Length: 147
Image 1 (tube, rainbow, N blue to C red):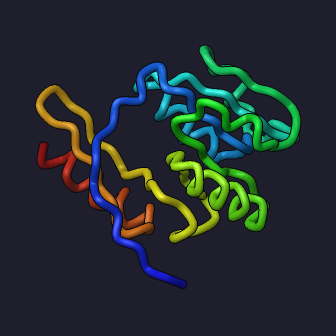
Image 2 (cartoon, rainbow, N blue to C red):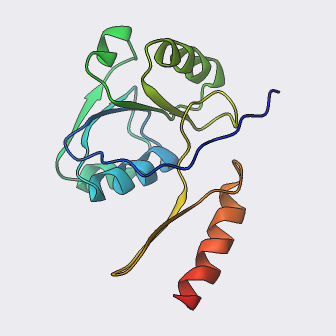
């Protein structure tokens, strides 16, 4: 597995088209986060596995399968299925098209990574532990106490 270095970056996703493939627990968490920042979200899934999706407002959910035409005008794609091969396939397509893509089943088959976020009146901090979300969360919780 090739190790990748990720450049830390804060990006405005307000009104940007974001495609989320899958509707499980992790997809739900990422959807909630992106909604806080005003993203325009389309979720495509074979089935809704996380009940919380039914309570989210301002997202489109379509029952179906991924197809490349869904990438038209996409700013970012979240591969959040439990099918590692499908996620890898989508990653490769998106990367070739210069679309930001996050893949929940790999630490390397992606070109963007979500950090653990602290957002208060004075600071917005993004924490990455090189693909280890548990370590990032632990540090976030320590820093939240300090701030």
